[in-house]
Amino acid sequence: MIFDTHAHYDNPAFDYDREALIEELPRSGIGAVVNVGADRKSTSRSLELAEKYPYVYGAVGVHPCESESLSEEDILWLGKQTGRERVVAVGEIGLDYYWENVDHQIQKKWFLAQLELAREVGLPVIIHSRDAAKDTLDLMKAARAGEIGGVVHCFSYSREMAREYLNMGFYLGIGGVLTFQNGKRLKEVAGYAPMDALVLETDCPYLAPAPNRGKRNSSLFLPLVAEALAEIKGLSQRSVEEKTWENARRLYRLP
Image 1 (cartoon, helix red, strand yellow):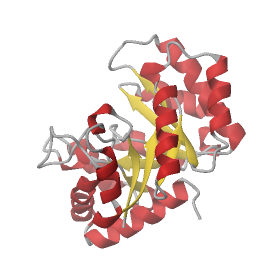
Image 2 (image 1 turned 90 degrees about the horizontal axis):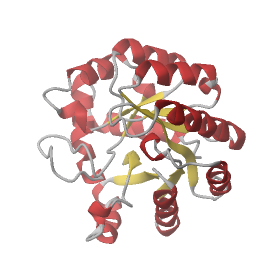
Image 3 (image 1 turned 45 degrees about the vertical axis):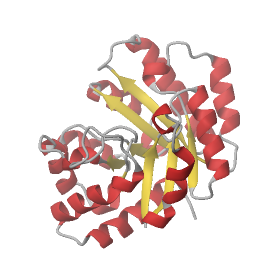
């Protein structure tokens, strides 16, 4: 079975077939999914999905690109949601300097606030970091994020940056980019990092693996990522699926 550690099935891209697709997952070897919040609305939808399907879990958080209008009241609301039975993480949270639509200082403020929330409630974090390598790492070190634990989702940085996160005890999220012809850097990181620190993810509906690049992504495409990782590691695809399943359950502290 495969564990998709990061999905967005609340996204409008799934409006026309969401129920049928999610119900198909277990029959196709997808045993668990974490649906990840990006703002209050998507967090609420993630929790609804987690309560409806026994193999879906929820993460609560606000993406950096949605953080401009955040308030202390929102943080309190997120805190209340973390007490719900199917919530396994705070996320996705972090920094995104690619889009430049939210002031960097605002992003940093609410990133730190959500890191502290995760510490208070005892949940791991799902980190989003795009074009913000140094600031993300600096803030996480300042916040002693290694004590909180979690995953750097859709890891896109260098082997040297991967070492920093591995030393903090963080997992690295590996998705469709591993299959791209221009995914050399991620392939290097995947080869370098120990299997104990890697988990599979889709970030669906985004980042579908080759040969489906550009199409709507879903957990059904994850065997392609497992196959690519198996080739890099010199392992069988089944052993990669089993090991990343175990890793995901440790990451999200599931029994």
